[in-house]
Amino acid sequence: MRLRLTIIAFGTLIATPSWAQLEGVIDVHVHSAPDSRARGLDAFEVARMARRMGMRAVVMKNHYTQTASLAYLVSQLVPEVQFFGGIALNNTVGGINPAAVEHMALTTAGLGKIVWLPTFDSEHNHLLNGPNPLHVPVLRNGNPVPELLEVFALIAEYDLALATGHSSPAETLALIPIAKAAGIERIIVTHPESDLVRMPVAQQRQAAALGAWLEYPIGVALAPNEMSFEEFTGRIREVGPEHVILSTDLGQVMRPTPADGLLGYMNQMRDAGFSQADLDLMTKHNPARFLGLE
Image (tube, rainbow, N blue to C red; front, side):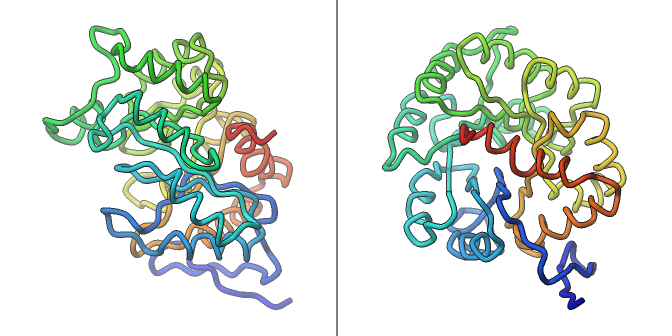
C-alpha cells in the first residue's frame, strides 16, 4: 500500500494512507490569512485543501473581525465545500455589540453562523493572563450585561450558534441556561481544555448536561505545554463522543495545515481505539447539528 507522510507537529512525521480523505468532515474552527496575526496559509489555500480532501464544510474564524464576508468570497472560488463565518465579540467589533452581530448575520448569502463570546479580550483572559484595559465583560455582579441579552435575542432570531469563547468555566456554566432560555438551540464550549479556558472535566460534563457541545481542537493537543495525545483522547472518553465536536483551531505559522492536521490526528485516534462511528459523530454529525445543517 502506498503511503504518504503527514506533518502533525514540528519535527514529527506520521505515515498515513494516500487514499485516506476527510470525506464529509466539518471543521468548525480554522484560522487563515488575511488576519492581523501571522497565519501559515490564506483562506483560498484552506479552501483548495478542503476540496481536495473531500470535506463538507469549514468555519473561518478571526478574533478581531467578522468572517461572513470571507466565507462568501471563498465559497465563490470553491463551491464544492460549504464555508461559514462568524464574529468574535472582542473590543475591535465593539465588544458585546448587537449591531455588529446583526450586520454579520445579514451579510450576503447568510454564511455567518457563529457568535463567539469574547476571546482574547475576555475578562477571564484579563484575569488569567495579564491586565487588558480593553477587556469585555459578559457578566456584571453575576448577571449578563444588558447588551448580551440583546445579542442572545439576535442569535435566536437569526438562528445562529453560540460559542463561549475564552469565558471562564463559571461564566460558561452560568450563561448556557440563560442562552437556552433566550431561544438559542446550538451552543458549544470553546476549547475547554485549553490553557486559555481551563475547564475541568466535571464542569465539562455539567455543560454537556445543560445541552452544550464541547469543542476539542487538535491544536490544543499539538501544544506540548497544554496536553498530550493520551490526555486529549482520555478527556474525550470521559466527556463522551456524543457531546464532543472535534475541530482543528489550526492555521498558525509553524503548525500543520488544518486538513493535514485533522487527517493525521483522526488516524491516530483510530489507532487509539476510537470507532469510525465515534469519529463520524465528532467530525460530521455533531458539527453539522451545531451549524444547523442537519
